[in-house]
Amino acid sequence: MRTQVVIVGSGPSGLLLGQLLANAGIDNIILDRVDRDYILGRIRAGVLEVGAVDLLDRAGCGERMHKEGLVHDGFELSFLGRRQRIDLKGLTGTSVMVYGQTEVTRDLMDHRAATGSKTIYDAANVTPHDFDSASPYVTYEQDGVTHRIDCDYIAGCDGFHGVCRASVEGKGLRTFEKVYPFGWLGLLADVPPVHHELIYANHARGFALCSQRSHTRSRYYVQVPLTDKVEDWSDDAFWDEIRRRLPQDVAEAMVTGPSIEKSIAPLRSFVAEPLRFGRLFLVGDAGHIVPPTGAKGLNLAASDVHYLFEGLREYYAERKAAGLDAYSSRALSRIWKAERFSWSMTMLLHRFPEDGDFGSRVQEAELDYLSSSQAAQTAMAENYVGLPY
Ligand code: RFL
Ligand code: PHB
Image 1 (tube, rainbow, N blue to C red):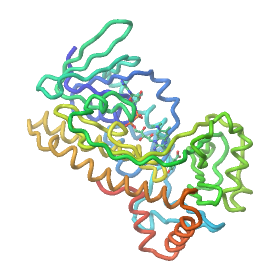
Image 2 (cartoon, rainbow, N blue to C red):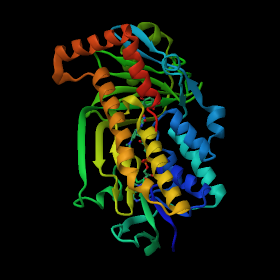
Image 3 (cartoon, rainbow, N blue to C red):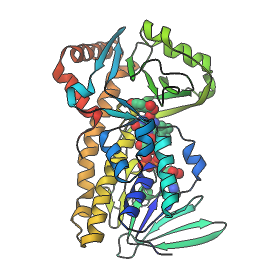
């Protein structure tokens, strides 16, 4: 087989890149080690920046998002029983779109199926080869048979545990990492959201977040120790805990119900440098991870896709490599700013037992300052809605 671009990974990065390339007449094949239903079963991000919304529109996949997504003009911070709204629209002129990653992925998969581009699911032992040369190729196994796809470029959109970053270890890859001493326990339920906007809560018992997927589906999170197992948490225990971490009026208004999904995600900051190795590019979670506090994971994947797509489009349309040559530095410049923001929001809102009462007082002082300073609120809002591409 031969194609122009092999995309490893059928998550949001791979699917979005594939759709933009297909629309530009650039042939591509997506390979994933699991199947479509498995990918759609993963409950992840919920907030899209305007840049990601624009890119989905450009890919021709934004129609359902504009119908069903919820435009949010602000969010709230809760601390010491107080509530402080961050007026995103008022401070920056921009809003965010609440529309789940599952739905983004479903829309992209449906469009890909309609445009007839090839996706190979359940591909085992996917391996990139010879990306240092002018003739790279990718092999994979299916039903005991090894297949080979020759290509011009390989896009590593295969997430944090994928094969693409692993295949460049020892080839000049440098990594930067911070692991946080806790995780988020998330619960999805068909109950109306407790508030029309998101609430991020700093509480002595730990962080909590009230998010949503629609007017009838809510997504809630609480900070838990890394030693906790999801089986330790009954639905009732979750609802009791999140209510304890919210202001009284919010806790009293909360509608509870049986969970549809419950899982624990560890929190990590991670960046790989560079993001290009010859004809192999790292994109999205394959190249970087942020803790979910700033809602940046999926949005950074989208900006990487934008930079790489522009480089590939320019290469195929004009035979110029400037955009591809600039991919790693352009993407990393935006990634590090989102890493900084996600880290700072994580540090501001979570309980760090080892930092003791001093750490809590510093957080309270910063939250109090945020409440009284429009400059501080504007800086937070500007980062939350997303820095320009
Ligand atoms: P994905 O979504 O991980 O997709 C990668 C795809 O690659 C496939 N793959 C392979 N295919 C072939 N061969 C291999 N060897 C392969 N290894 C992996 C996988 O099957 C998969 O289909 O990466 P992508 O596309 O870069 O998208 C990034 C986003 O998914 C990610 O940034 C966010 O979901 C991060 N994230 C969250 N972000 C938020 O903004 N808010 C959240 O609430 C939030 N929650 C989360 C998250 C990430 C999580 N992970 C990675 C465990 C919760 C979790 C649990
Ligand atoms: C979510 O809805 O899953 C979500 C929203 C905001 C975040 C993280 C996760 O910061």
